[in-house]
Length: 96
Image (tube, rainbow, N blue to C red; front, side):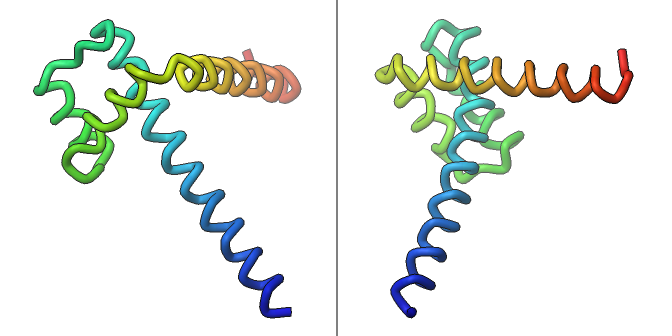
């Protein structure tokens, strides 16, 4: 019984961590693309401040984005899927 509770708690923590990391990378990707991967220091500071992240999180995210093409593709797909889902919901409610 205790093992089941621990697994559920671990799954919830993993899910929360995934959500936080996804948020960080989805905010960082447009900046990375705009700068073609060469993000200046002032952009990193601004991203850390706007995201209310610990200092250096933006730089770490940019480093990961620079070396992980698959992650960039996954983020693009995620953003496209969310846009399609949003449009579908909007249409179902009769909004333009």
